[in-house]
Amino acid sequence: MNTVTAEEPANESRRFIPDLQLSRFSGLYLWAGIVLIFAIWIPGSFLTGTTAKSIASNQSITAIAALAALIPLACGCFDLSVAQLVGTSAIVASSLMSKSGVSPELAIAITLLFGLGVGVVNSIVVAWVGVDSIVGTLGMSSVLLAMSGLLTKYQFVGPLPSSFKSIVAGNVLGVPTIFVYMLIVAVVVWYLLEHTPLGRRVFATGASEDAARLAGVRTARYKTGSFLVAGLLASIAGLLLAAKIGQVGPTVGPEYLLPAFAACFLGTTQFKPGRFNVPGTLLALFLLATGVTGLQLAGGELWITDLFNGVALILAVSASILGARMRSRRQRRAAASA
Image 1: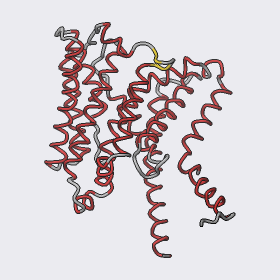
Image 2: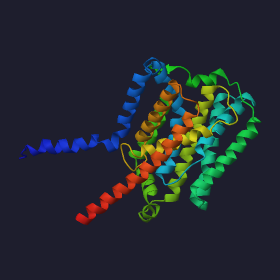
Image 3: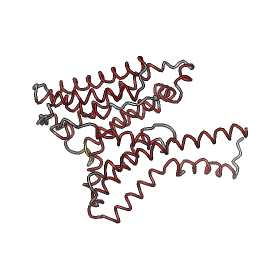
Image 4: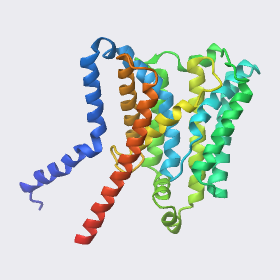
């Protein structure tokens, strides 16, 4: 017979309270604070449905780029080519439709294969040849930038067919369609990373490749998979970008690099400290976007976006490193006292 004591509710309470601790959910509180500040400062322009939809729509492509960067990071690698791949994929799709007369369906298929192809090359260079991921993917980014110039001749490419642009047009239950696409991608990535053996092996590889290999994980295979998925997601983001703007310029892409990585690293301080995770990444991204949008609506200069994202990236990486040190110290103290 089980006896319920007065201590059990207290124990349940103690187990619940840590789930609300500041260290895991500070981003939510900070986001609420930012919204409150701008709601008081510029209520007429900030507290509107138009502003909310604008943030949701404008950040959806950046969010998918961040998810593309997240998967190699979880596997212990950097993919610095994802941002440029977003731009080059948009250019590939636009060139196929506007210059070659290819149907939107075929252009989409070719662009997705192109993204996978870039992922294959990255995986060969990094996972199999052994080139450092920063060096290898930075080189790929430069190659993609050159390809963008070659395809566009440094001119805008477009206009694109209405049937293609319609894939991101309108709203679904009042929510921008492109935001819905982003949510679908995010849910799929979250499920794969958090609720499948594949995700556990990806995190094991990222935590300690040598230990994972000794445990029987084929780390090179999971690194390869992470670059393939990153390439696929970046090409999806490129397709959505092309459909959204209708004509693509030769320099599009690099502007997604800083906010994507800032969101990934800032996300490691949220929900699951010390671990790259989808909810934390999305929270960080929209927190930063809300701050930038508020400053712009308040009359901030155009350069405020780059400044905000650059500072955020520095602070996010610093917070991630300091958090890892603090957790390591707590673990050592716990082991010493055991």
